[in-house]
Image 1 (cartoon, rainbow, N blue to C red):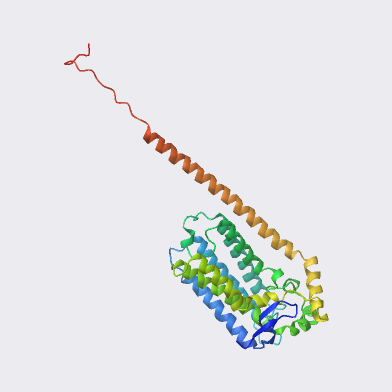
Image 2 (cartoon, rainbow, N blue to C red):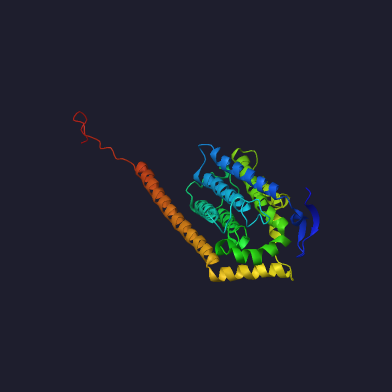
Length: 316
C-alpha cells in the first residue's frame, strides 16, 4: 500500500505502484520465504486424484517460487548485505543453479504435458486456467518458461558470468538506482504465481468457472504489482549512464555465452517433443476407434440360422 502511486513510469507507461520507493530488505526476504513455503506445502496438499497436468503446474510454480526466494536471499538482489547466499563465492552459486535447473525441467515438463497430455476430456474440471485448449496451454507454458529466462531478468545474465568484480563495479551502481525494484521483484512474482495456484484450486473445487478464472488472473496481474515490475524493464528513450552500462554488460555476456540460444533450443526441443507425443496419441486413438467400429460392425452382421427338414412334414 505505501508503494501505491498511480501515474506514469519514466518510460511513459501507466503506473499503479511505484516500487522504486520500496526499501525494506528484511520484509522482501521474509515475504519471499513465506511464499516459497506456501508453494511447497501447496504441492503436498494436492488431493490424490489430481491429474499429472495439474500436479506439474503446482510443482513448476513451487520450483519457481523457491528459485525466487533463493535469488532474493543472495547478494545479487540484497545489495547492502543481509543475504545468506554469495552467488560468486562458495556453494551459493551451485545451490541456486541446482534450483534453477529443477525449475527449468519442471516448467518444460508442464509445457509438454499441457500440449500433449492424454487427459484432454474434461480438462475444464481439473482446475487449470485454459486447460481445455492445447494451444492455450502451450501459450501459458511458454510464458511461464520465459518468466524464468534471463530475458526477464528474473535470473540475470551476470549470474552466469560469475565475475564478482564486474558485478560490483558495473551492475551494483546501476541497481542501486532501482534498488526498490531489485528488492521487490521476486516476491511480487511469487505473489502472482501463488494467486494462480489459488485460482487453480477454486477451479478444481468448482467454485468459479473458466471465464471467471481468466478475469481474476488478468486483474490480479495489475493488483499484485506484477505489471509494474515488468513495465519498469521497458527502457526509456534515454537511460542514465549507470543503467546503460548494465545493459551493455548484459549484452556482452549473452553474446559471449549462449544463454538465450540454449533457452530457446530447450523450448524448441520441448515443443517438438510435445507435437511428436500428440501425434502418437492421436494415432493410437484412431487405431482404437477403428477397432471399436469393427467390433460394432461384427455385432450388426445378421446370422443365418439353417432350417433342418422334418421327416414328418416333407416339403414335396
